[in-house]
Structure formats: structure tokens, C-alpha cells
Amino acid sequence: MQSSAKTVTVYLKELPLERRAVIEMVRAVILKNLPKGYEEVMQYGMISYVVPLKTYPKGYLDKKDVPLPYAALAAQKNFYAVYLMNLYSEKEGGDWFAKEYKASGKKLDMGKSCVRFKKLEDLPLAVIAKAVKLTSVKKFIAQYESGRE
Image (spheres, rainbow, N blue to C red):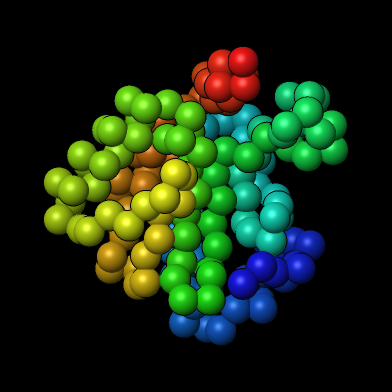
């Protein structure tokens, strides 16, 4: 369920109240823990946290008009999703995350970078906070570039 909203405010207003409440809770955790230098934007129909083009002018996949995505948050048709690209680009981070998630007592449903959950109670917000806080802009750019070699 990709949104055509151009701003986060519009995206949130488009959501039914119950789904908006979940997204707003997770968004608050992300914003509180997001390292300096990332920006919140709409990208690929989701609330996204990116390395701005002024910091990384090469852009994502060498597209000079597409900021490098770090994390994203979305209300999909049948679930919610938190995308954590820093975990995808670093094996140790992904292993750490899976271990922390399991230790929380919650069941992890994760693709390469996408953590899926059906209700807020299924998501260990403290683990999401640590994962978001994990990677500085400088480190993330280095991870991204080393993966492109």
C-alpha cells in the first residue's frame, strides 16, 4: 500500500486513526534515537530517514536526486514495516539485532531490512531504538559504499 503523499503530515492524515497511532508511536521512537545528520522525508511512499543530498551528493544508486535511505516506516496493507538499511549493510548489525529481538520475547518477522509487525505490542521499541541509534551518517555512508564495490 504505497502512499502518494508528498509530506509526512499528509501521509499520517491519510491513515485511519488506529493505524496512525501505531505509526506515530514508532515514528517518535525513531526521531528520538535518529543520529544527527539524517533527515525525515517521504520516499518510495513511506516515511523515510535519509542521508540528505547535501551530505551525500552521489545519491542512492548514483541517482543524484535520490537521497540515500537509512530507515523507513510504513503502514502496509496487512502489516506495518520498519526498514533498517544499516542492519542489511552490516552482517554484525543484523546478527546483533536478531539476538536482541529474540531476547525481547517477541517473534521476529524480517526480510533483508524490513521488520514486519501486525500490532504495536509485537514490536520491541527498545530494540528498534538501539538499531536506529546504531549507525552515524559517516559510518552508514562507508557501509553503503563498501557494499557497492
